[in-house]
Image 1: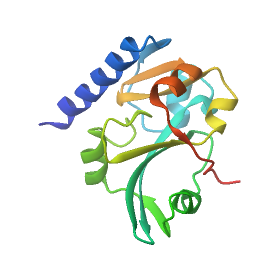
Image 2: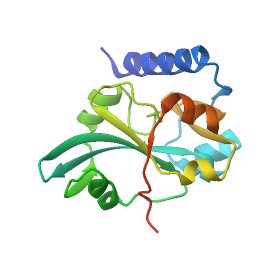
Image 3: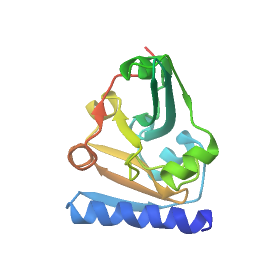
Image 4: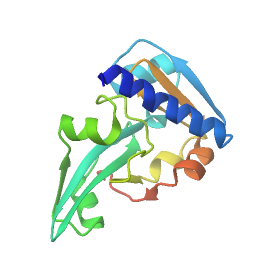
Length: 166
């Protein structure tokens, strides 16, 4: 299956889920840009409203797991905090092949929802403390979703883990 078809499937799966669960959201179509700063400007949202999705792998101490780690786009991740939360020794970003297998999305288009049973969803709480809405790429680089923060928490149900650099 081509990358474009898989990403379209992820986008549709996300929109179906949000519609089914009666989330307050809107889809914004825009130029495919990779940088958080540029896309937040196009969306008309603050950088801190952006939900940056990082596919990570945690290893060591008998731990071997993949994590979809979500944090505010204006923050940096501290992967060692993520590793220690799961009892591992280190965490690193997953390879492009792992990202594709676990999310069916290209890097930069990953929504803050896990649709794969082997991908544990965690989110840094700061993302939900500053704004009533969050914004994120919706499985495709040229489509974003802006949605109610409380609806996101209710539907995605991420484990809240502080893993941003202080």
